[in-house]
Image (cartoon, rainbow, N blue to C red; front, side):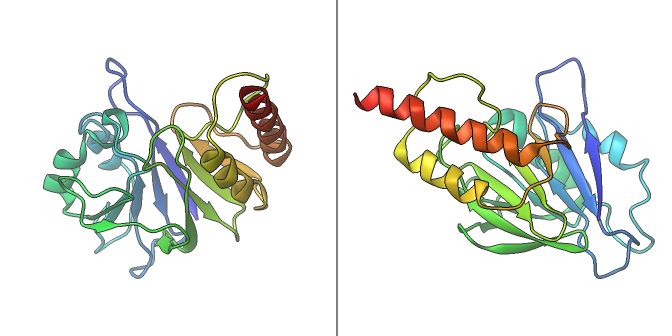
Amino acid sequence: MKVIPLRGNNLIYTCNSYLVLGSWNALHYMNTLVDVGTDGSIIAEIEKINTGVGKRPVEQVVITHNHFDHAGGIREIKLRYNPKIYAYKDSEGIDEVLKDGQVISMGDREFEVIHTPGHSSDSVCLYCEEEKTLFSGDTPVRIVTVGGSYSGEFISAFEKITRRNIHTIYSGHDRPIRERARDMMTTTLKNMKSSRALQCF
């Protein structure tokens, strides 16, 4: 699996998008874009990437949640590549609604869809057991202090994530996390639970 970060237009507020490719660009591997950014400016970056002969550069898109900085560029991406677009919440441009626990092929790997309502009601993370990799969108994975407000539903979802063996995290706005990712998430869960206990006191 190859993961290529895309940033798009640096002059506007947008997210990190990621192009997920198979290791050898075989025809049956699914060229997948995780999030599309605010506009279509990532298209210029995608056009420079070797995504495989006889393949569309983007065959499918997975939206981690429907905020404009992650999903605003759907129209431009759809016009250019006509990919199938997945999201947890149905809205304009979405072809298939994801379900918690669903498995989806991205590149040459399988990813589990994990619903993580917190940042938004339709937030999802995407986890690959074979690569020990998580695409987290805007789900907060680094919380270093006690405080804030976290619902029981979100904490339960985060507990599910921390049970996965995660070595690398690709987030919606930060640099990729490649060291001690699991320890960091365990600390985050502990701090969220402590915050929740204070809220209920």
